[in-house]
Structure formats: C-alpha cells, structure tokens
Image (cartoon, rainbow, N blue to C red; front, side, top):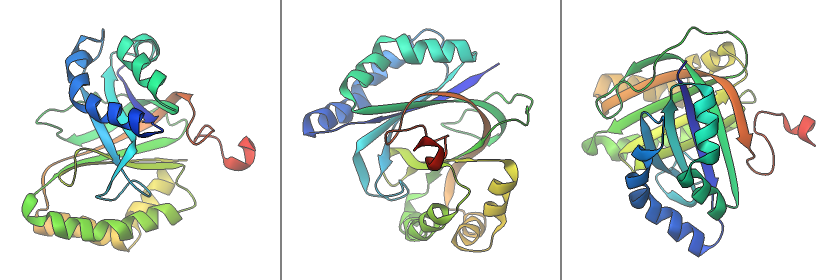
Length: 235
C-alpha cells in the first residue's frame, strides 16, 4: 500500500539555513538513490502561516512516496540523506499519509496511488499548482486573505505552504479532524471560494493537482509537540 511522507525541518542560525538552501540543489543527486523511494520533491516554505510569497529560510520540506509504510518509516529514519537533515535541523517532523483520492498532475505525472479509504483518523489535503507567470500578481494578492481564513478556522489541525519554485510552484498542505470539517471550509463563501472561482474562470494554473490522504502516523515534533495532539492535551 503506497505511503507518502512529508518531512519538515526547521533550521536555526545562518550556517544551518545556508546549508539547507544549498541542499535544495545538492540533495537532488542523493534522493533517487534512496532504496524504495518513488516520486519525491524538495521544497522551501513561506513565512507566516506559510501561504505567502516571502520565503521562510528556516523551514524546508521533503515529500516522497514509498511502496509501503514500513519502507517509508525505515528510509526516513535510516537513510543517510534524512539523517544529515536531522543532524543539522533544530526540529523535525515527518507525517505518513495514505492517499485516498487524487486528480491532476505534478510535473506531468500522477504521483499518488489511491487506496481504499479506511474512514479512520484525521484527513489531509494537498493542493499543488503551477501558477501562470502572467497572473502570478493576481494570485498572490488573494493568498493573504485565504491564509487568514484558514488560520482562523478552529477545525484545522495543521497547515503549511511549501513550494519548489518561489511564486510559481506552490503546494498547500493542511490536516483536518474529518472530511466534514474540511468540506465545510471548502464550501464556505469567502476568499477561498472566490479564489477557486477565479482559478476556473481565468485559468490561473498551468498545472494543478488535488489529493487527499488519511494520516497513517508521525515521527518527531513540531513547535515542541505533536501537531496531531490538541494543545490542551499536550500541556
């Protein structure tokens, strides 16, 4: 059963951040050599809630697919490249995901192999888009309002914006307690709904992909705790 991993790394200090920036190029040589790895992407992140065009030089991400959850856990824990990232990082968190729906393409391929939905556990949503350069300014004008709405939603468990190329290749990732709460956010009239209509009516994206996952597990911590555990329980 295919498993997707999303690993986040936080780097403190200019030396570690410079190293992480350099690895956006250097790690491309090592990634394909990791046993069992399928599709993979190296990403930076945005500041604030993550959904901004200003890069956060402290946070980087690795997204990868694996043939099963055991391989995903073993390689993200033991492979030399992931260990190097963890040694340099001040904090790291990996979440393991089972794809349950996907449509569209990422770099002209369909990376996620959809599995039957168990219906158990939190649900994650990933949206990836290549923004047409001619409409990038209009797209980024909308993003701060969308970010504020997501941040204010009491149901969202975790959220981050990452990307391969600043301004043009963007990924949004969020985790929700269940399908219903995520669907309510998507249907609600507001900046998010208006942006979706603009995407369709004005053709903002050259390529897009929408995927949903069930959360299958995690390792590490983020901001000193597991994002999957409510703060009142973690205290």
